[in-house]
Image 1 (cartoon, rainbow, N blue to C red):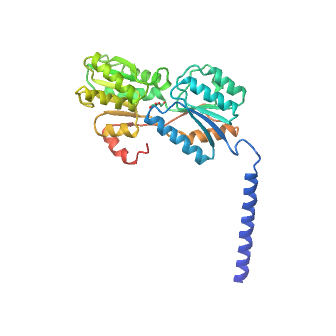
Image 2 (cartoon, rainbow, N blue to C red):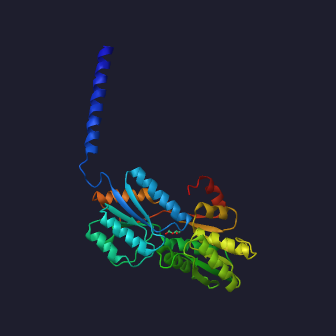
Image 3 (cartoon, rainbow, N blue to C red):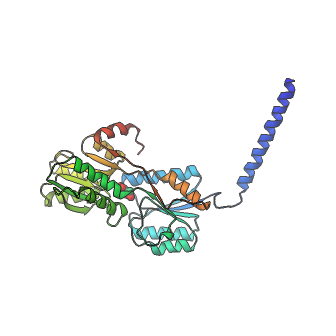
Length: 324
Ligand code: GYE
């Protein structure tokens, strides 16, 4: 009796293995459909900030996990380089193009070329300003206006007038620079005693933030608050403020956006006062959207990332498990 059961079990196991084997060879033999092996051309903005580095790592890791072949290019914050990269992806006949537009305008021509070549485009992180939304499938990224509003709201709740603010803007013409400015201005509009006394681009880099802040410290008296569109520029401003003999976080309060590790450490140390989070870990969602688009599934035209804000205490609590 026992022997009989064992024999039956062995037979069943064999049958299962054989079935698996044939299923496997069927898949690897491949019908050659687009979802078998996806090739994605990804035109990244550059490597200007901690956020960007984390974003690049996320996209590369998620592509590997999802079995997507990634062709990656770094445009060094230049639109012409991104356009070239997109054109080369079209020539290489990739299955899907994803990119984070360095600035909002000037994309229609190249996106039309992709459309004519029937290569779907996914916008990630930053938006384009175009009347024709058939030029891309979906846009995955943060609500930058909301981020600016959160920064401004904190200031209205944590200051007494008069308050002189200097704004370190991101890259001129970039969606996060335009929208973070807009959101902040909206949030502080009701407070007549909060004034943006100077606003200048530091190009989202630490060196840019430092340089702009050095000049502003010389030209602009009585700066109470720095609102920097990202952590890196805020960190550059900290260096300039210290060099001018002032204490960042006390003599001059600092609000930034992103919440990358270096920013969170400065926040925990009291040199930054408040950070609005912007999540760079978009890789998994991007691969998921690409697979759906190529499988002919409906995807939402806009996918917004969930984000939070951090005070120094919250930064201390979050830092030990912060991934980037
Ligand atoms: O905040 C900044 C980066 O587009 C959201 O670009 C991104 C921004 C991010 O350089 O650090």
